[in-house]
Image (cartoon, rainbow over all chains, first blue to last red; front, side, top):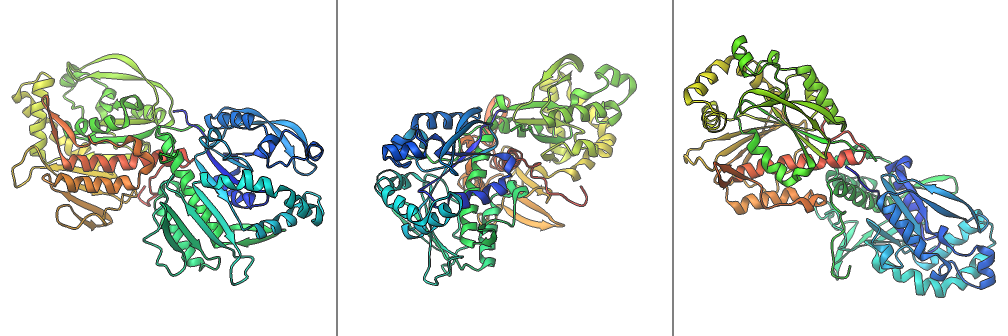
Length: 308
Length: 308
């Protein structure tokens, strides 16, 4: 009757919105049911050493990629392990922490899909890919308020990192089951960003055809991928209808149903985004069905593909 | 990450077809994943003692109902226990056996839904209710060939048991989530019996409206229950379409998919029944979704009702 944790990957460049996406998911799954790992913990060099060596944390050589994969294997198999800790507040390493297996694991990071070995260890792979302009804005805002940098420092760091972003980070998006790009819109509504989703056939996504009428969310197929455009100003009732349609196929998880998808904070202010809620709902769908598969002795819900 | 077994009850009078239904299910679930319990093991008296006392095994006083419930609780919680063994071949008790918890448990018997305490311990409750004429035929055939009785003995035993069947066995059908009555049909086709199903709202049954067109299977609602009539001569392709529609909502269990639902033996000859296959498919649907619920920390898929 042994099981194993269901592992969600959330990969994207620095300040791409990883924590915003996962925070709402963890709230639904229950903090006590989720192991949280950030692959930044596997940096080889602290902030000072990186400056001396002129290497960015985005470079695989700046990370113990092999140890990351080893620990991910422990996570996947439900074995506990001792994890290094990188402290973003001051860029140094803290004491090791013991990671205990739980029902779910969320692995956030920069290079989570960089090797085939790593990619094989996720049940659901999400890649966050906001437009660069938006990401730069988010990074300045976060790093100045919470990581003690000045605006100039952040902007020059972004420029210095760009070659590594291009070489190592962005190419990983092709390995995701779900690519999400929150986008500014023509309404210039910063609070209610549109979302562009790419749903790849590596997972069997919930069928939304019965509930979409082209009036708001549009969906089209290109090269076997589904492309969804979710307007940020989606009518909340429509958002609810679409959530309902997905829950309809998840009645076995109805005890986990919540009204609070899509919530996020700006500073200390609570906001709600329909497009974020829908993305979270699709991710939950896959976490729940993967749990069901493993509980029934299956290996998960990943669809075998020629490309792997 | 602890789980518990998912418990299926199959209750019905003697020779109602309990083993025929469950054998095909166990084949799908995997013998190694199923604990099998027959509540006949909880008889207080062996065959000789029953004759002396003029009591039938259908009477609650002929069964340790309290111990049955106690052991069912162990089963439900995934604890192992020592179970008595009643031997149908000669009507005596054999040595105790150790029952180990597995992913699923199938509990067959005469009085499985007799007390509220017992009823609460099943995830799925099936009641088999063939027409008496058919059941008498089945009982004569089985008891003469495999339990060493003569036809006259079986027929007189059936008459002797009828008051207890009426008083204790048949009233239990109202507590089932799924009542199944395999029925002879006007075509006089003994191999391909029709099936009458009652699907109660105590479970959320798979939605078949999109795949039923009234041309073969009919469905109507009475007092909140769904009544399905499945003709025994259902076109196998149509049967497959309906199975597919249910599997569509069970893609997380696709590794358990089999072509062999509906198989049964008469003597040593292998037969196939589309109506049996459909009944088994509906039961599997509930076993799989209950597994998913429990794996996600839920209590199962039973819909809370006022009546309990």
